[in-house]
Length: 265
Image 1 (cartoon, rainbow, N blue to C red):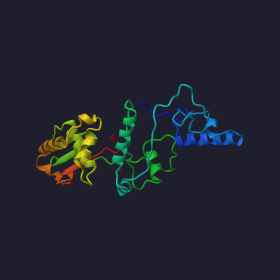
Image 2 (image 1 turned 45 degrees about the vertical axis):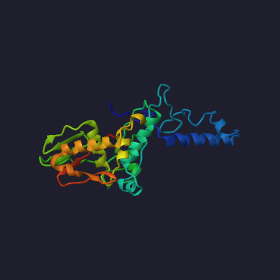
Image 3 (image 1 turned 30 degrees about the vertical axis):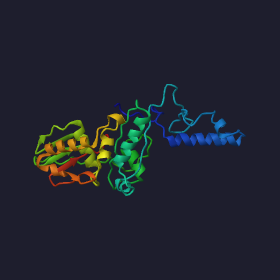
Image 4 (image 1 turned 120 degrees about the vertical axis):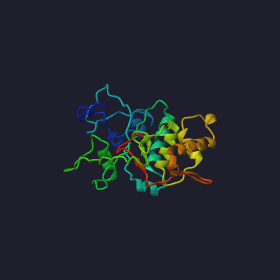
């Protein structure tokens, strides 16, 4: 990815809230001048029609005609504890949003990144998220220094290391040859380790892009779990069966999970 451009060079970085505020102001002005209705004042555009893009500094900033919208960013300010209290998780919300976009626009390309920041960082959750993810229009706080992520401790040659960033799993220092589905299964159980995950949920998550008539049955999950446990060796019991409910990942002193400070989902 090329180096980020300044606002003057990159007038296409626009917040929807800024664009909508400018549009509302224009509609109000036209209505005060006797426009028949809001829709006609807006040029007869439907709610799904492309909206004119304004620059970060407002409608006075001209966007070159060769600049077009190529996607969008949604910043969500929400900590994991608050999400958990609402009965969900940041990972689940993000993946469901991704699945929805891919469902309505199969040709879309979606990249989701989690924003990690110090608990002592000043500002609202949304301000911290925008700053952490490099929003070029966010106002930096004076005296603020970039968050330095501590380097992970050197891996021990004993136990299981689950590296979510590199998609690697090691047992006693030796890499495990997990299949794609086995790693996805382990990853999902780790991300939802606070609860038991049912077989149907695992099927819908791991085979979300498969047609309904090609969806495997619950027995497929049992087979993948058995193979995953076999590869985890003496620490296979970290993936446990909850009778009548599904499967659950349990923490163990010899199991270490690494996640990158910012990682793709």
